[in-house]
Image (cartoon, rainbow, N blue to C red; front, side, top):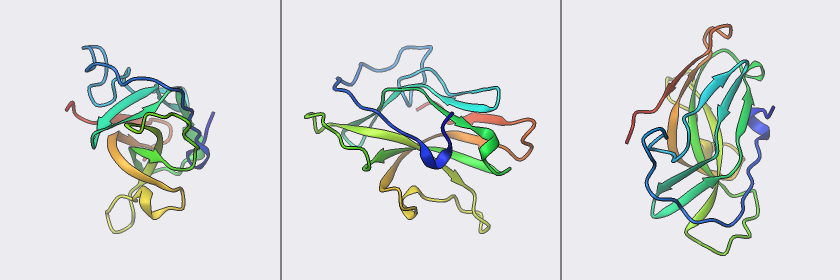
Length: 142
C-alpha cells in the first residue's frame, strides 16, 4: 500500500479518451473511487481540464491506517516531480493529494507543501473522523 506522502505516478504515451461512459466517473473517466478494507482505492484516471489531459495510469492505494482521524479532500494534482518523457504536451502526469482540514476551517492546499504540484480537481471527501467506519463521498457529477 502507498501512504499519502509517498505516492507514485507512472506515465506511458496515450491519447485522451472520448467522454466517459455511464458506469464511469464523469470527472475522471475511470471507475469510481472506493474503500476496500483499510484502503482508499483510486483507479487509473484521465481528467480533462485547463485544455490538457491529466493522466494516472495505475491504481493507487492509500493505507487509511497511516492517516490521522479527520476529514480529507481527495485532490488530483499535476505532478512535477516525475520526469515526463511523453512528447504530447497536452498530456500531464497526475497524482493524488489528500488535503486535510486546517484548524481555521480551510482545506490544505497542495501548492503549500513541498511536493511540487498544483491542484486540478477534487474527486471527493474522505471522512476518517471514526477510523473504524471510514466514509467516502465522491464529488458530484460534472
